[in-house]
Length: 170
Image (cartoon, rainbow, N blue to C red; front, top):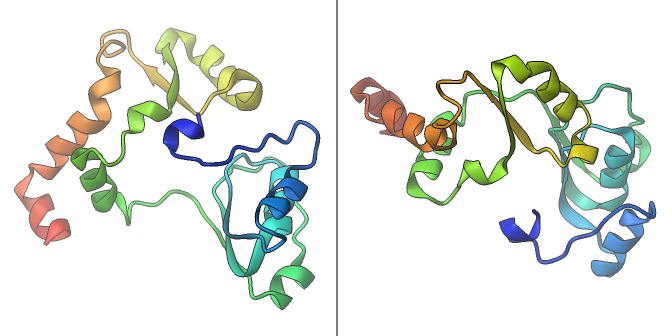
């Protein structure tokens, strides 16, 4: 999946040495931006280990357990840590990017379920690593065949509304 989106290097942490591998690839410099998108303590730890001085950690994973924040290291290296829930501030830009074709969100969809399969959908997403789930779509039976075109079609519908154009795109 990572290569499909343009990654030049893919590192698996199956041996528990991802941080070592990343530091070797960067000649021990580290990365400018580390994105924690899984929501587990070990991935947050890796981000703290690999971010370079003056770098940024973006925490977008949904954590169900506490993580250790190594503030002594992050503070002394002037690291910026950003967390938060998804907001709508960048939605207009996101929709424009989808409509332009630069971003194809349907490539992120790995699983489709109907409403009567909702528990299976939650189980799949709950064990996302094992199930290799990125985005799980739950739709009613009528929409299940059409759901793949929703992101682009929805974006166009919203952007075609004159009030939306005037308020957000000018």
